[in-house]
Length: 222
Length: 222
Image (cartoon, rainbow over all chains, first blue to last red; front, side, top):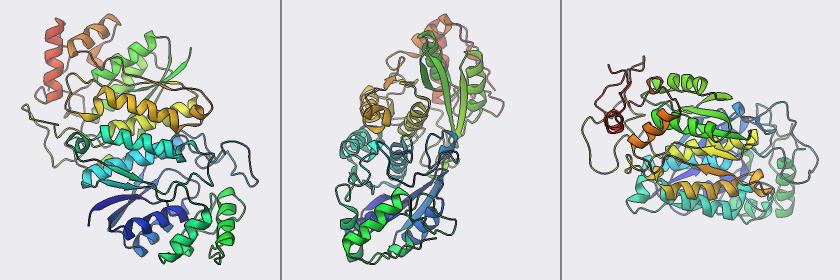
């Protein structure tokens, strides 16, 4: 089995991505980042998901992005919106996906892994610049200039298998792979125990996804 | 004055880059990363350099790259070489520059800065893949897809003013700008007090640079 690094937040999208990476035959090394996110409960969910879906290892690395702030997810003074907003939402974390992918790249290089799997989605979150396919292509190009492996001719591939799927399609795909979505936490302001608010954008998209998929929503709401 | 983020390690190259960014008229916000490097003394040097060269702010962010290891700079079990080696040296830290630039990008976005200055050098350290001009161009392209600012049409520029200079040229340029290089620490295994070993590759290049520039070497050797 070839090694892959899988970015695992503990939410629905990254859990599905892990299941797809496993189904593709990879030995999966999951990376979560404790970046000062408001919804730290997702990190506990990530540990459960990694175990349940047969990850080879799961590592949590700490990086205090709250030191920079600038997002409702890292600055307690900026509220999480509970009604739809125009443009790029305040839940956008500056350069977050660039940072997450850089850390995945570092670990991939140390492990000798040639594949990174990332559960970004451009359909529901089209407001986030760093969820777009053109961003992913640019990161893959960068990765293939950045590392010793690249210089030595071992190319690295970035896989974003759910980037163009709707939430309902993601849920159907994951359910077919046997994922228990009750383990996952998507809410931007989940309680410490992992209970979802049911009102933030992430909760609304997730709930609508289960409805559209015709699958009972197992989310534990507060 | 327009804001710029300057990556500042505490070494000779990044100090010179800061002086050049100041000379270009920027309000400089310096970022250092405590990534578990063996030569932590460079962080104290960075604070002194930032103050001495008129930085507006200096921030140190912590990220434990030693959790990944894979480099003589982050793994105490891998010795720093004291004689020249073939190929990419073991002092290469996997994906380090991608990570440093990602963090600079995040802070630039929060500050509303449109310029990042980075003291990478491709001449002396040509073995490091992430010091090459093509890597810098790829990162700048990525940055201009990654952020809210980019989507809204505010382009970000990555400046690497010393990338093609020899160490002697860098030292001459910095000396002309009034830098006191005694404040800087380049040694890969500097003591806690910032004393240089005089034997590692970084010390050898630095010493040879002062010799070639015909400028007395102010380095404090152990």
